Image 1 (cartoon, rainbow, N blue to C red):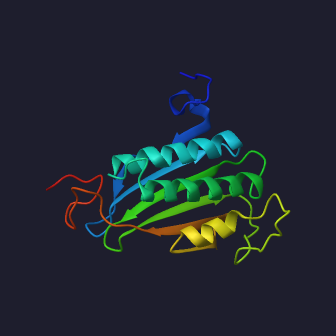
Image 2 (cartoon, helix red, strand yellow):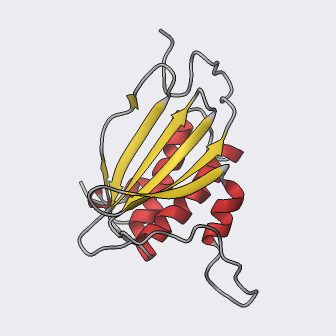
Length: 179
């Protein structure tokens, strides 16, 4: 059922395709989320909204520092995938992983363009209207980078150091029930 509008519950189904149910790879690693989005401003906006929703399910409320930081990073990486990595007819992919043992959330945005981003943020002049995105990523992320994607494209990733959410312990991380 497709609906128009700007609210997260009103995005079209064609804007996103969830690539799998919540997954847990091992005891040392927490939950994951992956989805595919149209390479458009609407797809980038929806990626950010779904990331915030998923973090809330993992125990990080939308107004928390962790959620706000991840939302900004997803917004920037998704916007870059749409603006600089767009290949006609190809979508971009978002993957979020909560790595409990490392106490971090990893954000990965993959697009079909083989062009790698700059290795570091640029220093825009005060009059420049663009060019500050990777500067934000560099400041907000514990670390970030890009890797080639097989068979085509690249994945730009960023990691955010986090504490466990309230109510969680090392043996019971977000999105996982007690055994």
